[in-house]
Image (cartoon, rainbow, N blue to C red; front, side):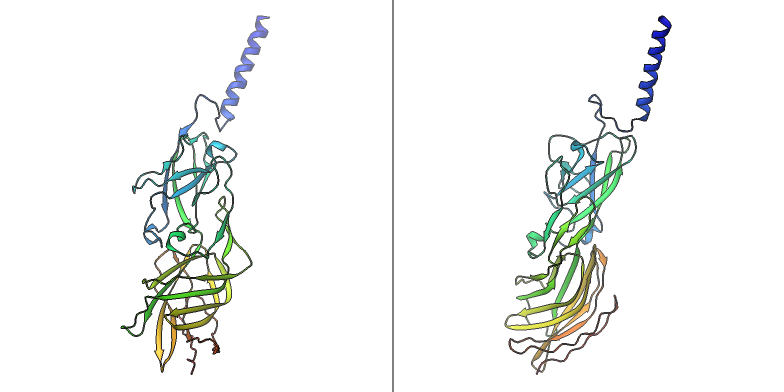
Length: 321
């Protein structure tokens, strides 16, 4: 009988040891794991369009592994000091329990509820005011973490496309500070998958218009897309310019910069759009087009050849009489 008891004891001890060796994720109540520290940077931070870096109250959502509400869609906020980790918003801390590397994903801006799987965010790019642009600058990061590597360093990448127009006048004395413009025929709505970083455009198209500003540089955050026959209308006071961009290829994470020169020839103004130096994000396609002045009831006939990749091409149109 004593021999049998010893056998049962040895068997139980062996099972306990095997269970401890095979369990990579410890979930016991006595040792919660290693406390995580969240660090976050933006790819090419110095060239972020709206801000040169994170701004106070910027919030990100962090998910470690999957299935545990205590590490799902956890909100963190920029501390306000460069070189410092992000602050945990709620009182509960994020702990890493896994002995091996497990996936970590994060997205900006924060949405949803803590402890619940982050949902897709509905995108609408019609509001391009400075206050709203930071809200549609969707970004995503992914890495790994473990109990021995709890310092989570996140590198965020822009997922939208950035379209930048730099306006200037051929006449140095002309005032173009009250300039506005409208892009028509582009995709303005879609969804942002906060778990994968993917952006899915809707089929319907619309237009994006800007408000008058004294700044002659305009930046738009747009859904990545490839579109044909995009209408660009520019208004400077009572003078209107209009043209058709036959091909517009906006890539995720790329910035597409154009210099737009407003010209006057024989009292028939027209514009020149040329590719400029691209500094934010990654360089994207460009090109050059020209268009005559547009007057209601006098629709111009515009012939614009196809753009050729990222090359600087000249596209001519004749001013209206």
